[in-house]
Image (cartoon, rainbow, N blue to C red; front, side, top):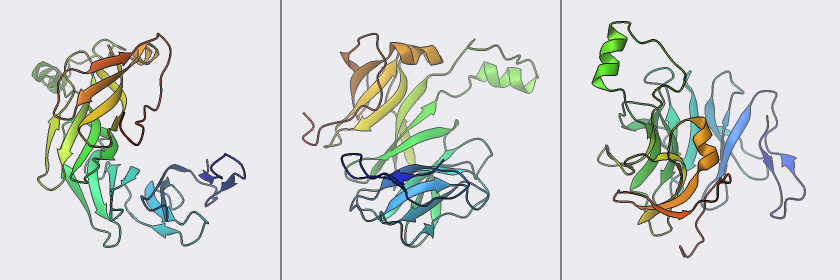
Length: 239
């Protein structure tokens, strides 16, 4: 699996940094001068950056854990990413200074996180995290009384927001609302969501487009057609 780059019309596709191991999850820097991606080329999943012309490949993280899902801050100076370097299999939210190379965990969450995305002002990070275990579920696990039944009690994935400087987080979506995908509005006041009424995989086939305030609350449905949706995106003017 390679990362490719092509002209804006899709013509002239070519591999960016071809390697026998996996390369994926590429993203441009805000100024278009760099592309960051995840690669297994040194034996573990780490973050790399490279110029769009394929020059100056640089390794940004060097850790035996699984680093992934890098996203440039609006000023291009920092990267948000997920990593299970604190506990294997439990990805947490990290930020690294691109030049200094110092990574730090933004906030500790009870469950693994995914899809980190910066707010337009660079002060907040949105991410998706599943509901944590209940006290009863924890007790049953401690007592080894926790047989696993497929889709018996699936957890909702919630949209959350972390304050990068303060190291705090809050949940944005509530109720029977499973978040599959999202994007900040250009002014940072709300999100467009791809949501489902249940967390099981079949809920994606019954998804809807919704809006929710960045302050939290019940999502407002935009459209539901009974068809699949993917990759909701705002227009530049937010309208």
